[in-house]
Length: 243
Image (cartoon, rainbow, N blue to C red):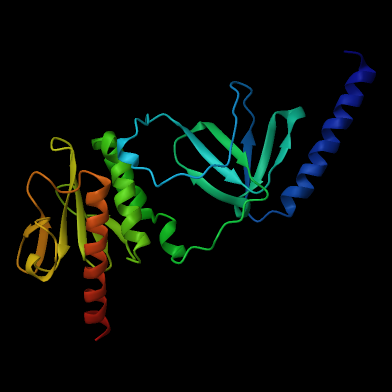
């Protein structure tokens, strides 16, 4: 490369960096990206029924996925940047091999419970614990907590003892991973006799129920049953606190 070519290249890089810094200055929370050239990815918009994530054979090293309205990509520098405020959705995974999807024209409805759709710090710590103890139960664990939060149950999971995680600040349910039984055991505020549960609950300590022995939560249907019961429990406990 001649000196003249080098000067032209440096000038181009400087111009690119100046444009980039101008864009960054307008962003609230910029996130740096490194472009990867390996692999071809095709993206389609589709509609399907809700999937039972627990039945899918998803590897723990699957790529993370980021969906954003827009991003600034600099092919010359094999890098880019996206503002956190432009991110529509994200799926956790291998962030060193992530997939960025740009969806400028997708309309996103505001969730009825916005503070509950984003997993709290406590819930995320619970998921990390599950991934270490029983990674095959992670999809089911995520789905269970997601259904409970989407039912309007506020709070976050806090680790207690013997692997049990308690919902805080209102102790209305607990979760515990049972790798050998391949399920999630739980406790619930309220005696079994106070719920219609079709044999889903057993008596725990006075005033509380627990999942039937050797069953607990094993499927998405179980997770839905638990979420409905936790919703009832939350309504009862909330009324007691307000009174």
